[in-house]
Length: 222
Image (tube, rainbow, N blue to C red; front, side, top):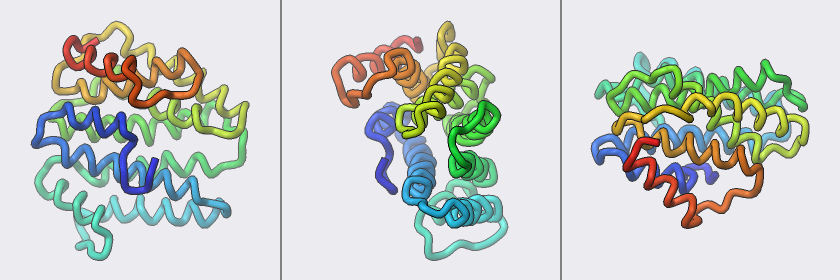
């Protein structure tokens, strides 16, 4: 992902959300992309951790302290003030990315912490922005989405194997659920992640089959 641009399939899922909700969702995934870029560029884990902790603390304090100089924080603060999303809730996403700066291979506990904080955190906040409480199956699906995304890009074979196996477990939660219409942008991402975990191959983003899978979910909730 580019630092300030969402994954193209994330962008398409956001485009399927109601128009008033899209700016909030886009800001959340821009935050996720910004944190991903920090991890990707880190050569000294301690420095990367310090940068991620700065973002975490800034998000936690955003409701109480004025912000300046960082456009993304200004945008997130406005969403918080409008009651659309709580930035303190998004702070945990940074904690998730911190887990990936630990020495490889990562064990199951570390992967679970990463998945819960990043994937569960962003799906929970996105559900709030969409006007719904996040059910347990959706939080598990968010965790599976984050694990699949990491596992398919991880250069350490053992960590990648563990991440994808755990993603497979988490993504079973959405298998038999008819996702409510307002949460279908998130359901799209979960179903694409399940498809990626099943194939374990390179993602052909934008392929007709993947676009059809997203459209089918938008129409049916499955």
